[in-house]
Length: 408
Image (cartoon, rainbow, N blue to C red; front, side, top):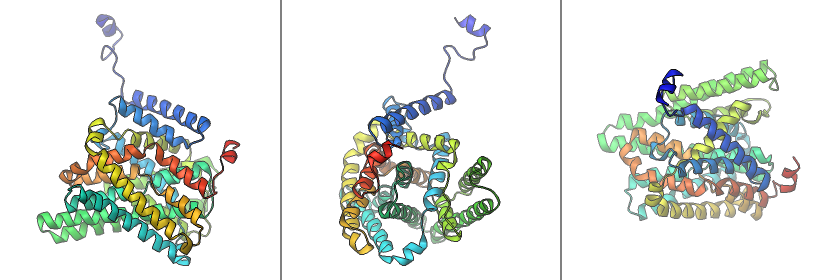
């Protein structure tokens, strides 16, 4: 056989599948599982995507402690960029000014959620700086899951709009908190207060600058071209991906750039835009790969080391954020039932936590090492029930109806 393989110019015998083969196999498995989950179980497709990723990890092919190196990180950054840009484009600052109790709700549920995670991690013996960083990683909302489920279910109403705004603001707070922790670590370990202050300022100022450029470019395209045209969709997709790539080159936040760009575009444009779902087929492939990778972010070693702490931290986070969202429901203009539904949509964590963990590992690997099994365990716990909880919350709030979805 070896001589025959040499005759036909095989580089290896037996043949070794390359990266493209595995990507194609994962796409096939994710699409099939997503279709089955949506058609048979009437759950969001991303439950199937995450399930495919969990199966991949179960066979020892997950990202594990590799934490988004190379191609995985690129795919996650690009897909998250699309989803966060769409999410930001639905955040109305005028609404926050008109309803200050909603902004107060956002601050309370995020800050108390961070505190709950910090208290749990500290109770398990982690150092204060490790627990503080962990509160950002485990306290951040699953903005991509929330936005994707809302789009797929075509939900609409007060709870839908609130969960989108709250998840966007929570992401902003979490990135800010983690950058402040990183600055504190520089100050604490090296005594370099200039770098400790300059690093967070550079991240936010630079991210805002790139976001403003992206928002301005997209606004110009929308004024000159028709959004329903396929070439326009490709142009918009290219602009978002270019901005995310630029953020990677300049060591800025790949989470803040698309999110802030969407917010700026929404609040400086005369009318909101109805975006094509994830900017066409290419964007849909990136979104599928995002949730497959997020589902594959676990390992048996991580679960054995961190599942107990992760479970307690998620429970504390859920209790605190749920209490705030239901307790503030009346003051922010919704019913108690709608508040309960909103609280359920705030429970998942997903790829945003993974990106923040990867960034922390690049800047402070020793600190991230203590948090890695906890964060990966938390993601494994929420990979499948997370999207279903968002769907259930929308159903409780009366903004999603299974019969209506089934007939679409």
